[in-house]
Length: 285
Image 1 (cartoon, rainbow, N blue to C red):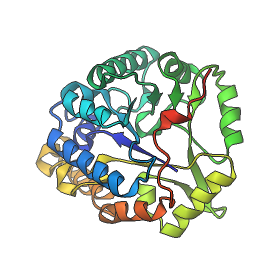
Image 2 (image 1 turned 90 degrees about the horizontal axis):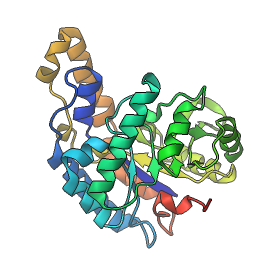
Image 3 (image 1 turned 180 degrees about the horizontal axis):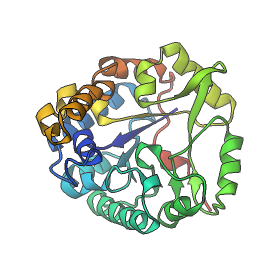
Image 4 (image 1 turned 45 degrees about the horizontal axis):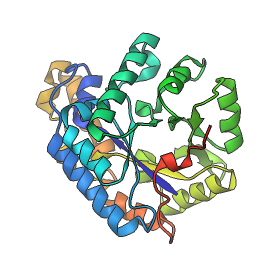
């Protein structure tokens, strides 16, 4: 089982999503504390091969906190790309996407002093109806981990439909629990709310369907909610109604289930530990 971290600044990204600003200061101290908590967890629970995992970092983190990205890479973790800003790519033009991919990759490689081979789209949002966006990713990266499937065969068929020749897809699982109810993913809010029995069943399902089990987490799920909380007054320009809604909505990401998340993850890790970095799965072309 692999673990990956979508390493982003929730407070910065929420303000950008809501139009409060284009970009602004990052909560670098909170990002450092979240990394230290993750590193401590891996030291205790990662096992012999799972001390190092993959961090999908936004380019803006590398731009404003290059020493943090350098430290993460220096500790042996893989630095992969999570776009430059945490924007929804499916709403953007081909030109903008190409510019943001290049900008992010350059900043990440400069900070990490290591090649950046992998990519994951913010919010896992890509236009999957046509190949254009995947072709742009293929131009800059060796693998992509932005897609969800139920079986390895579905992933292979999708890769062929996108006419991908070099880009390797390393997907995540999305499936119903025992064939009933909504689609559930192994990570984020889904993992926080799912009982251990459901998560274990999905891990077993991934293995049986030829998928590599992978759990994804975020920095804001690791530390105290206040670390990344956007205050009501910072949202005031949205108007009273929207500001109140988004001030309360943050509970879903920052508060509910977060204090139990690392304990749950520890119970899900196999006896021999985590499997390591995602770039280990990239086959030679």
